[in-house]
Length: 255
Image 1 (tube, rainbow, N blue to C red):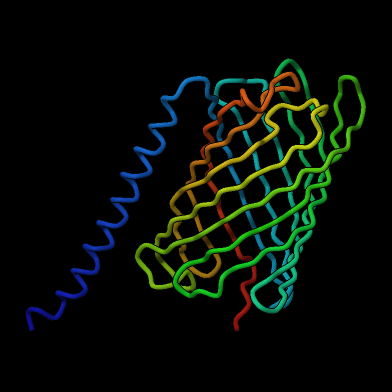
Image 2: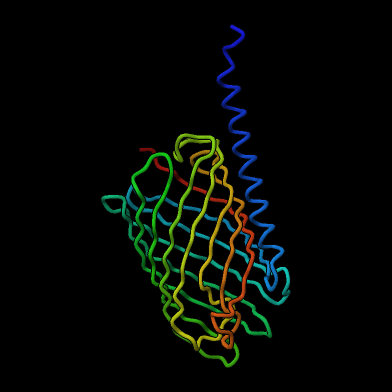
């Protein structure tokens, strides 16, 4: 009788060790980049609700505030809406609609409107989430100085994964997970006068799924980009981005 709880105790200890190892790896990963030279640091706060209309159709939303620690004149507000239609064989098609307002260095302020059709694929695995997301952004950027609109396109390709730490599947509740992605941007318009025209970024972080409706994430993103129109991508700027996000499935449908 005295050994009945031993398996449960061993499982609990194993989960604690797993989470501790993840925190240690994240710590050394972040410290390595934080002490690099010629980098900037940003904070992103995100609320990401999802409203599900049918088992095959939903709308993902993101409200975001982004601020740079080292430059008081730089910050961005964003609202993004992505209708998603599920297709057979683990595909979905999506169409992003984004509005951004950015205050930038040297009083360069831009307003941006984006349309982003895309397609996403997830491998049919139960244990982890692994997939790819391809999009093409159609961007209209308004610059207050010299008060004109600029149009450009920007293809994007993202490889993403979520890996549970102390659960057997991402469909369970009350567990921690690792969240990561790598994304490449192709900026084909060299005349677009904007700061932080992204080249690529990598994200790694820890999430906690409370239940089928709420998730909380603390993420670190390493971003490489050009700084201004006069900066070549061979001399791109590096940014450390710390993201704190709340994911909220407003009306998770029962299967």
